[in-house]
Image (cartoon, rainbow, N blue to C red; front, side):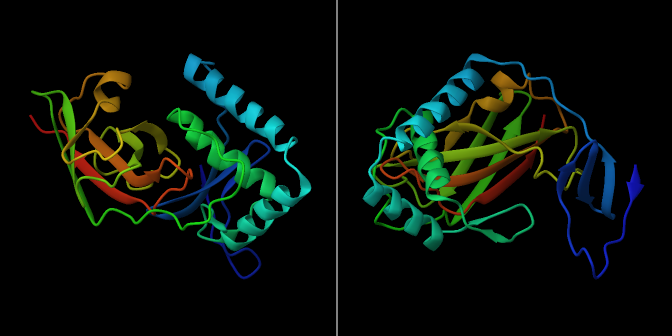
Length: 228
């Protein structure tokens, strides 16, 4: 692994180019060989890909007026990329993105862009986990989450709490029922990632998800070390 020091020509760099991946850790920027993960093609992955394909095809059925509305909405609602920069999606990308989220929870797709802002973020969140209970418990406010809203959780599991850079590890892991009250048990870590072991670190980026629009609130992060 080679470290790099970025100067005036290139201030920040992230992602992969060919066989090289650019990343950032606690000791600064570095480059490494790109690892290409094996695609297990699980039923969940196949379903997600099929849903995205279906939404992309549905975009082609929208009339010009609706497509223009999505274009304007996307321009007025830029996303933030991994470097913290604002990026404007196309109308097509915005349409597919929101509807693909709605597909995850089995909610009704939308043909027109949202006319209301996204939901408010949680005001506080914390998490505990133990080997004895094999459970990760989130506690949060405000509680319960409002009607038509649910928790949307991106999570990661690391061997120890010393791993600070986890952006590349975070994955969507699960969502709650609507109007879910605190506390909430996160089943993913123990059921999908194996038994909880002493000293592991669990991370959960918690959003509020609007099931009518597909919009997410800004995340609030909870971390915990698995106790005995």
